[in-house]
Image 1 (cartoon, rainbow, N blue to C red):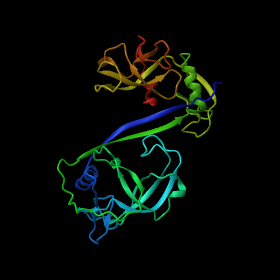
Image 2 (tube, one colour):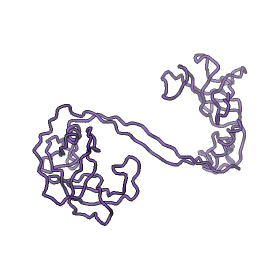
Image 3 (cartoon, rainbow, N blue to C red):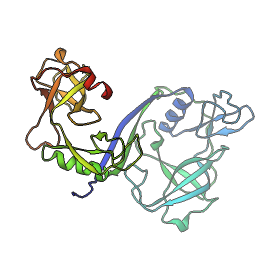
Image 4 (cartoon, helix red, strand yellow):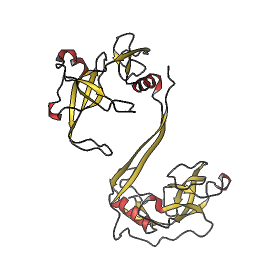
Length: 313
């Protein structure tokens, strides 16, 4: 029995969003070294600004400038900064109530150690040298023992306002497919497809899941299936995927391998896309060194009868 596999994985994509007038003014202000909040009907100043009062749900848009100095209201020490965080050396995450604001802004505080941070500490903004209209235009906060800053009374009107942002989202994690799928992947290295049979309903799951999702019991019995199978349903792909060098259009299908109780995904090749059909009998095509079939091609057998695969649609 092969060992359980694990591998580091990264999921990353750019998240693009447009900005309303309040967020546009806030981020454009940061580019110009101006911090704007929004004033509610009852006189509270919210920083960072929001478009609706969190207490009354009333739309708010009365922009007001606050000072670049403020007071730490609470904090937590970050002893091991991660990729993409504001500072590369250990720092404190702080909530700072800027002078003139009634709510606190979350950011990093550059300070030598946790012993130098406390609730009530006076701080000021350290601006980034290059600013583009994002929250990182505030490089961080730093301790400050001078007089409170004085806002200039900016009205929130800017030339060349920021109207949209692109925020990268990234998740780094270690994935383990577990015992059942580790065995499945190991078998694929030998051009074999192995599933596991449920001891209760006798259905063979490919890829195996370690347990039957219908009966809720563990699966242990390994069953080799295929290599041939039947197309149960399919779609024609007309949009090119990034980093996928396949001529359009092509067909992606659900394929029920002989002996399997569950259809798996696979690309269909070796036949014009408009000749692929339900019931088509196919077999895998492997490329040298591959860990899974490159695609499936027709076997030349007669099409499977619909009743033989209708439960696998």
